[in-house]
Each structure stands twice: as structure tokens, then as C-alpha cells.
Image (cartoon, rainbow, N blue to C red):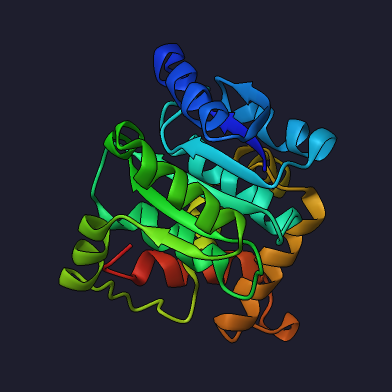
Length: 218
């Protein structure tokens, strides 16, 4: 398979590339920053993206957000996310973004790369359109189910609404989430519909933010 690798720690990235090459896969490109991911994916369109969650430029969840941007634009692509953390919120966001798409989805702890056969099996499963989730993450997902008064919104929609509540413009949010302006505007419109806000309600953006601020689970 043709695979892209996004990982900011050079030694880790080199290790992933070596394991993939040893497994007979072609690494078509590699990068150390999330801001490169979508543009480079458009150029080469690999079968699978393997990415870290926390990456530059923000050293937050930039890698995951870049992966979700790829998933929205390339729904057939496989996405395998690597993380140091068992915490379930990243996995929830990844799985929510997979809904309705044909591309495979995986979420593994980084230490899995050292278990070469297991890691390669996960890559191949994701490349074939399947799902591969670390068992410890699955346990965490079922142990602490998410609950929110805004449960009609997907995690992606809540992420957008949070940025709207912070006063960001659509253009700023689109850049931060690595999506096109048109995709972002579609997401905002879906938020309004999910919250039951029509054009006759006035400034729907303000009303949506007020609804968000009322939520104790935000």
C-alpha cells in the first residue's frame, strides 16, 4: 500500500517508516507538521495516513484535526492515528468522523509500533476499510461513555461550535481545522439545523453560542 506518515519526533517517524517499508509498503511522503498534511495528501492521495495526535504547529490535537480534514475531503482514505494517551475523547472524535465513510479507521497507542506484526496488521486492516482500535482504548470508551446536553451535535460539530464561541471567524476556523471554507460553512449550517435554529430566529451564530454556553458539559 501507499502510505503517508505524519509524526514530529524524528526518531519515531523514522521508526514508523522503517517498519512500514519492512512490511512491503511504500511510504509516499512523510512530514513533521500537521499543517502540511492536507496539501500533501491532495498531491499524492495515499491509501492510508498514519499520524500522531499532538503535532506542530500548535502541539495540541493538530494531527487529529488534520486527519479529520483528510477524512472529510477523502472519505475513502484509511486513517490510523497514533497517540501516547489512552484517553477516549480523541478516539471518540476519530470514530465520529468515520461515520458514513468507506475508509478504514484505526487508533493505536504509540507503543504498538514496537510490536511490529501487530502494527502492520492494523495498517493493513485500516487500508482494507476496516477498524483497528487498541483494546485499552476500547475499554476506556465503554467505561466512561460521553454525555452532553448538546448530544444532538457530533464531536466535530461541537468542536466547530466551541471555536465559534471563542469568537473565531469562519475563515479562521477553516484554517485551524484544515478544511475548506465551503466545508466549514456546511458544518456551521448543520449546527444551526441540529439546534433547531432557522433563519427567522435572527442571528443564529449568536444563538448557537448562547446554547453552547448554557451547557454545563462544554
